[in-house]
Image (cartoon, rainbow, N blue to C red; front, side):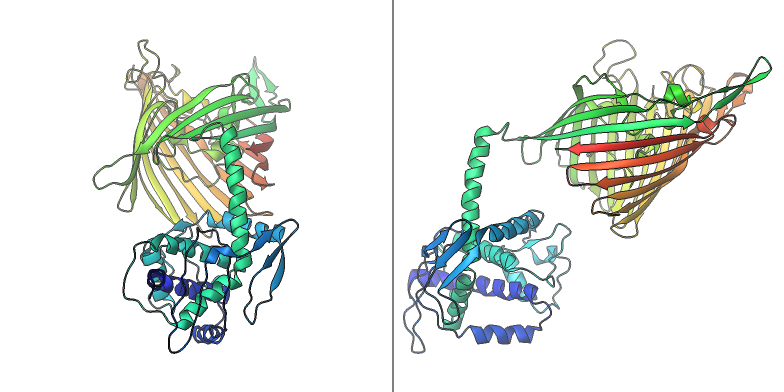
Length: 610
């Protein structure tokens, strides 16, 4: 027996296992016995002197010496005379008794199918142990064959959710791509292998039949790879960077507020101050540069320009602020510079740290988790949780898993670059945050604590009294902030979240002055409404409001009423690059004032991503 055949004997079980598994996916309704009978009936076909081009490099399968039972010949795989052209592909090969000698296939359709399969496959991940596939059990009829392919040959990929989905139907294109992956893996195993496995003529016939049957799809894969190599070469010549990806976002927003009149007594007579605003049209543009400095290290740089002016002067309350407000006259400036990388900490899994000079938010990807299901709401209150808006800037932090818990710690300074007294990294306003969270589908929950100095605890969307309870500005105020928030997913499309936030504020100049600030709310998000990727959202709650403010002389004050926020929005997903979000919200008793009429805000936001 020749060396090539000896090598083939080592890897033939992978081909046979692949054929069984792939056929099982394509014909999930058939029983194992029916599939076995079908394989046995087709394995007896006489096939001689064939060749096919595959994506893999040449794999030599030498002639098999005759045995008393039969004489079988296998030629080189990648030598078939296959010509690919446009608009069709014509192939000629020595056929078996049940395969036509000449086949004409639409190459455009083949490549479109393969493109679609590849796009799906990119979301999958290679598994190296059968235990990584949570929907596969030893009771499954193909368990042993699948375990052999996964653990011995590693040519099976699972889905991102850790499943194999063995009962899902498959196309011939998927079969061809999977067969090609196993062939490439087998080619890598051929040199220098040895062992005592045996192979039967029926096994060899099965291998030849599979390759012959899928010669068209395998040839199309080869053409596609050749085309991609040319495109990659062109892109490499024109690329901006081999390590940096540019992600851009441009937002245009049309908004207006109306009603919310303020009734006041001036000189013994009642005066109504209107609060309607003009219609505004503004924008925000972000250019994000993500640079991979190593397999785990990432440098994030953001340039930002915007001109969205808040309605605070017209409505005389911060309860009407929008989610993406901010104005720098549309001048681009550096708004984020962060570096993150993995870190080894005993008993902590998946730990990462982050450092940054600007733009480090307390709910950054590598800091605290934010479980708000309506982060794309129109209003600031609907899109954010209060505790994460109390502080932020430059600093450092880390996050990792301890058992079932996700643990995060972080520190940010308001003006870390300013050397003046009362500023700098440790002598000015800051926020120190800690969080313990459980992120286990369908339930997510987190308890978050932060200690802050020199920051308003209203997060930019509470009442004026909550933002400045002592009338001296927030620069000398210390606060202990506590937040509990949770989200429950009733299905992949429906998520209900809620939070409670409490802040105890202390005046560091007159420490007997204290204030209690509360906020709470509910958020409901319904996904895939109308079109895939679209979201219908509802928000109801109480923006940060001062319940009790203790002043000098034992006096106490508070907001005279509780403001309520009610919002509905619909983010309509046009495609992966464009969505339109109309939204409307009302604030009842704005700024916690019983003399205020309800204020309404309407907005239409269009987002472009590239």
